[in-house]
Image (cartoon, rainbow, N blue to C red; front, side):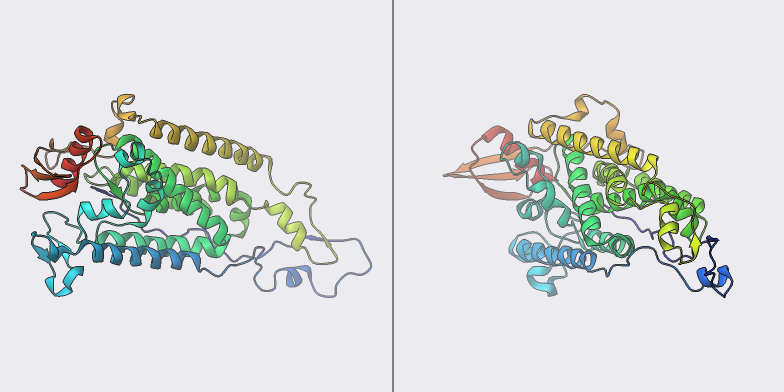
Length: 390
């Protein structure tokens, strides 16, 4: 099972600013006060500041779904030892089975985890979205939701719930697609693909709105940009640890980075200065609302995003395995060392047919489970065996 770990980051761009004074118009009706007192008095906010409600709703939804998963899991009902038995059916699976303190792999798969076999062969493409709302354990959901609060609320206040909601969901979908194209034998859950999408959107927003940020930010925008890049690199580097789905991180980041150029674009500073100039003063002319480079980035990003998601989804539904075309790409998600290995052991199970059911027993850990007799017996049994032994 691959979990998707989140990250902690705060939007590095300041939100309040002061407008630069324009030059006075050659008119007899000149204000009696000096220009700098009239234009620079108080703080100027050129854009509406939104009340954040969607991101807190996302946080609540993720926590509620984790509680539901624990209720469905019902650890005491199984023969496995449980942690926190005083919690009743909400008690956790053993550390050996789930070190993140959460439900079993089988429960997550039942709840809608990303499962390549079911997406491709059972036409359950909805798992590409449902998996981003599930988490493998208490530590997993806590880390991701804490990151979502720090990153998402500030972004929603700046850009509104529609744009940030779209970045979150589409980035999560993009992360799931790339994950399924590379991780073929294990399930994957977690919101960090969507979280990396928000980080990618923050980065592209700093780039495309450079003229606004450079004039209106109360801090060094170049330092903020370098800090954000460093945060992204560190969090992607963490993804090379085993059992962390770094392909979801990469896919979510790329999707959010492209979406930022499309959805988080602002008018350039010259346009804002012209609109905000008080009566009696003339700002430098600004013919276009956006800079040429903003239009170019908008078009290129939209094309790349649509083509990338479409090609990836078509390849996924056709059962493509990108590991066959990229022999080194698996190192992006896990780098083997003397402390751990990346490739899981081959799952071996003993199978017995009982009427219209099968009983599988994993030879590696001794766990046993009864399943309905699948239609495609060989491939389905191997997949169920992999889940049982994971």
